Amino acid sequence: MKYRRKKRVKVCKLCQAKVEYVDYKDTKLLREFLTEKEKIVPRRLTGNCAKHQRMVKTAIKRARHMALLPYVKY
Image 1 (cartoon, rainbow, N blue to C red):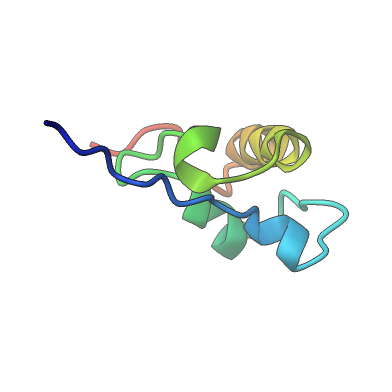
Image 2: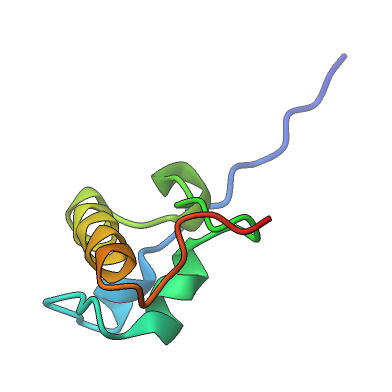
């Protein structure tokens, strides 16, 4: 008989901190949502809600365009 692990309910960090807008200039916050190769981490891994994941996505893309974050890390 196989046992399944209980899924831990992930909570959105940004909802807990009551963040209303994710700013593209806040690179310290945005780096939490990037992998070591600078890819955007999906929602199922970060635990973000849909609203904040969209905000994070656009903020990262804006920061990349303004050269605050790299597109790729080799």
